[in-house]
Image (cartoon, rainbow, N blue to C red; front, top):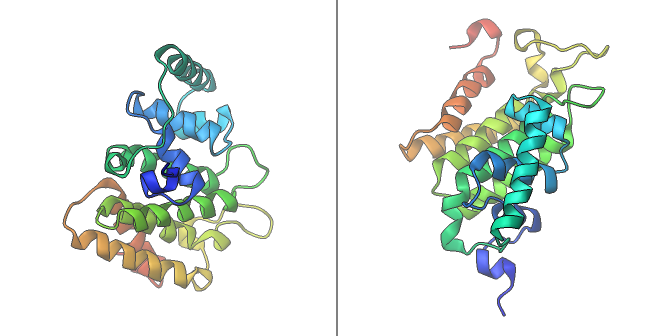
Length: 216
């Protein structure tokens, strides 16, 4: 019998479960909400914030998707490699929302949850290895790397948020910026534009400016 990893081509257990949860029988927001809850451990409040909706709406969404799974008997089977592209957009949306919760946390004393940012970037790297010819995968990875490069400068010593123009650019993570620019260049070279690439291109302009006033 072929193993789940051999069936899907996805070696990482968590990423394989993410693709499994993003079942096309469910609406994409429902897929993402379920995966955020069951795989990433986000609370209903955190998921509601990710969807920019009231917590009660998210709670109802999660209840409906669980009921639909039971009523329709939707099988949670590991998808084959040929099915993965059909689930890619939902997977990217989930990874981005995990990163966003780490970038600006909902239910923690501080602004950041670096563990979620690191995990989102890790998952994006794995998807990029799996689908290197998908420019939006590279665009999302570039976007997160460029945004995360500023992590250490976003909070002052007294816990206040430091706006972008006031951050100490000498402390930005140059390795993350270099990797992000490389991934963005590779994505743009494929000439299939998308929203993640666009956001990454904007982030790149900030990352490359030595001073805020030098930003193109």
